[in-house]
Length: 303
Ligand code: NAD
Image (cartoon, rainbow, N blue to C red; front, side):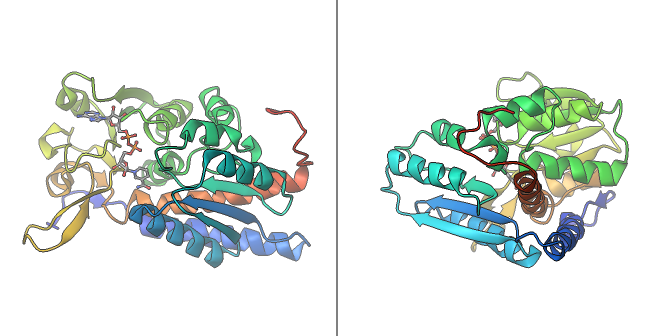
């Protein structure tokens, strides 16, 4: 990595602070007589990246004093059996949060499984009820990666009212919920996507650029407005310059962009650690919700 003109936003350090605060809150809850918050993690199949993500999430739970209950299944698990598992977890009062690791095998309808998770246990924030709550400015579960991006922006810039923000990508997991969060934070938001015209021009106008595309180093340094803040969500594995082995890079050409930007997240060590910290935060929130309310599966939702 070259020396930079801009300040690197240390996602690991921000995440460590957030995680330490969550661990303290878990201790306080238990001292007051509550059980540890509990997260059920469902992994279907043997996708190597998913295995790593699940391992990291479970390790982070342990460190924060959150109980994780792992449900690992072969790729051959039927959709009916997965839905039955989700129904059991919905009804289980010992489970506060449910995370079904994506992607699911091709024979399973992902939207159907997400919709089957009780919205009050939906710590990933992907359920249409939580997406609707976010879009309409109501409290609910916010997807962990966009929430982590907002936390990084607010701790770096403070108030972002009126800032021109460009979100590149419109997925349900990152781009769309992030746009809603930024609108609620009073930024002026543009969402670019695969059909947008003249992405460099859109980027040049933005005070804040968030790239969530999945294309290695697509956003170039000369596209950026000098002094912009850049949040790089992308995780792309590419061959090393030496030709031996691979490395992770983001959606932003880091070395170039860091010369122009005032603040920039690295990959790895930027958004990734915040995603996990926000998952813990959501699980703690789910536990507080469960403690405050009856989790009868008959209860109609949304409340
Ligand atoms: P996705 O494939 O669902 O969505 C990609 C989006 O990029 C689409 O909306 C598409 O319209 C847009 N896009 C594609 N080509 C484009 C182009 N040439 N110009 C402008 N927009 C274009 O991906 P996703 O799930 O949103 O993830 C995006 C990236 O973020 C991936 O690299 C993924 O691995 C990474 N990611 C990282 C974290 C994390 O914790 N750091 C979490 C989730 C996703």
